[in-house]
Length: 335
Ligand code: GDP
Image (cartoon, rainbow, N blue to C red):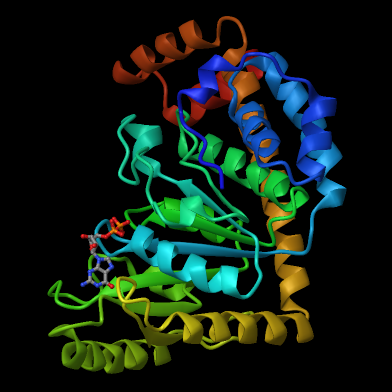
């Protein structure tokens, strides 16, 4: 059991990559926490050390299942992870929970919250829970989460749950780093798609209707039929997998085993048809290109004089002296 508090992040300024690596490879959860703190650090020196750490850990990771979990606030994500986490532990899995919270990067607030969530799961051995990384943009937070996955796998965690709030871009980001994408839904919120964009349903490998307890049961069956019908309308997935809908009650710990069986079917099916491996390779390529793009952009805007010249060109555009395309061409040529 280990829960990394935000306050730990400031009180441990000294890092030693060799000992953190050694600790992580031994499965020492405190070392894993420190490693992730290093990965998350904005300090330039730390970034170099973090890259070394990741390089050390990358070849040592255990085979893992990376699972994305999303849904609107209040749908029951943390309650679900509490409950599903217990099922995973019964299956002798080592479970790491990481979060991507777009609100914490944009407004510094947090929808997922820094409070200790999943209070029971946190007490278990073989569980590591880390609140969302903070940062000034979603891309940066996403990169840190991806690197944290590598450290968790080197520490022996074979099941990685990545939680995100279903409010926008963050699902796409999570989708780009997981093997399986699970969308939580509830009945009774009027529109059963609950403001979730079509694209997110399309990404999902499994829809799970949560809170199927008490008065909700009959209604949930109707919603399930509607969702199953809707799923038929989507194009066939590249993975060859057909998404379906399951019901659960996180609070009553019901439905978790069916969800687990669906996950294992997905794993065996996509390992047999080759998609599992191809998909991870494609994700690596995506992250390679994404990193190049981020670096080029950062290097460009950090160049001396770019800021000032940009302002001049914006004024020139406002005066209709230059078009945005010409201004961009000029700035790129001059810098
Ligand atoms: P999150 O914002 O998606 O992480 O949602 P939470 O896990 O914090 O849950 C939001 C609320 O829904 C809490 O009051 C939970 O107790 C409740 N809740 C979660 N799962 C269930 C469930 O299976 N059944 C019922 N009846 N309530 C649930």
